[in-house]
Length: 532
Image (cartoon, rainbow, N blue to C red; front, side, top):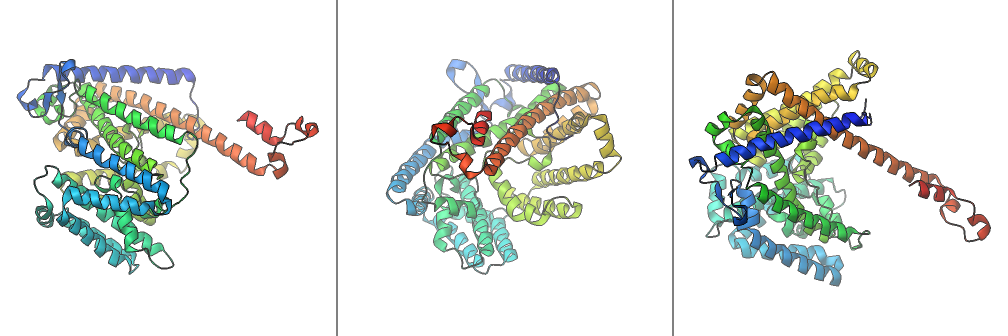
C-alpha cells in the first residue's frame, strides 16, 4: 500500500481529535510546571523579566535566539538592509555584474565587522583550497578541506586562530566560527565543482563572489557553488506572477512567528526545565514526552525562522536558496531528518548520494552513511555528545533500509497486500520510529541525562500505560502526516497529467481559432483548461 492509500474520513477526524486533545493536555502540564517553579534557584540564570504587560518572566536559555533577535538584531537589520539597497540599485544599473557587487559589499561588511586579521585568515583558507581545486583531484580536495575544517574544530589549532582575530566585540567569537566554518564548506563545494568541469577552471574571483555573499556568509545556509554561480550570474531578472507578494507574505509570517515564540517563552519554559534534573524527575510521563517533543519543534522553528529571514533577502536577489528544514512533526523516517537543509544538500551531493548511489544496496548505504556522519561529526565539533548523536542517527538510517529490505520479500510483502491494511501497519512502525528520532536528537539539544531520563520513563517505568498511550497519539499524528502527503501526491499527479496532456496536443489545437466557425468547437486545450 503506497502513499496514496486513503483512510475513511471519520477515521482521519478521530485522529485529529485525539492528537489535538493530547497535545493540549501535555502543554497544560508544561505550563503548570513552568508557573509553579518560576522562582527556583536553578531558573535564575535563564528565566529573566520579559514583556511587562504579560506579567510573567521569559525563558532566555537559548543563546542563539537571544543573539539573533535581541543582542545582534540591530546589526543584522543594518547589514542586510544595506545589502538589499545596494543589490537592488546595481542589479538595475549593471545586471551582468550584480554578483560582483554582492561580493564587494560582503567583503566590506566582513572587514568592518571583524577586521583585517579575520579577513586575512578567510582569504588564506580560500587561496589554499583554490590552489588545490586547480589540481582537479576529488580526494585531494576532500583531504585539504577536511584538514582545514579540523583546524577550527580541534584543539589547540582552533583556540590559536580564535585568539588572532577576536577582540572587544562580544560576538566576534561566534562570527569567527560561523564565518570560517561556512567558508571552508563553500570552498570545498567550489573545489569539487571545479573538478567536474571538463574545460578550464573557475577563477579565484568566482570563489570570492560566492564566498562573500553576505546573507550566507556567517550563518548559512550553504548553497552549492554550481547553483549559486548559475543564479547569481544570470542576467534574466524577471519575476513570476505574485512572486513579490509571496516574498512579502513569508517575511511577515516570519515576523509573526518570532512574536509568537517570544510569547510562548513567557508560559512554556521548555528550554530551562530540562536543565534542572531534580525538577524533571518530578514531572509526569506525559510532561516529559511533551517536553522532549516541544524542544525539537522549537529547534525546527528557530532554524526555519533564521534561515527564512536570510532566504527572504536571497529571493529578493533573484536566488533560489535551500528550503527551511522539514518540521519534526512531519518526520517518521531517518532519511528526512535534518535541521539544516543547506548542509544536508551539500552532504547528499558530494558524499551520501555520490557513494550510496540509489541507496538500495546495504553495504554501499552503510559506507555512505559512515562517511556522511564522519564529516557531520567534524562539522559539529567532535565531542562525546556528538559521537553518540552521530552513532545512533547513522544506525537508525541503516536500520530503516535493513527493515525495508527484509519486509520487501515474501511472505511479508504478500501478507501486507492481502490484509489491505498496509498504511495502518506501516503507521505502527512509523510511530515507534518517530520516538527513536526524538530520543536520538533531543540529546544534542539538551543533555544526555535528559534524553536517558525520557527514554527510561517512556519505555521502562511508564510501561504499559504511558508507553502505549504515547505511541497511540503518535500513531494518530503519523496517519495525519501520511494523509497530507497523500493529498500532495494526488495534486502532483494531476499537475503532471495536465502537463503531459498539453504536450501531446497537436500544435494547431493549442491555439484558439480566430474564425467563428471553428471557435464554436471546443478544442482539446479548452477542455483541459476547464478541467484544470
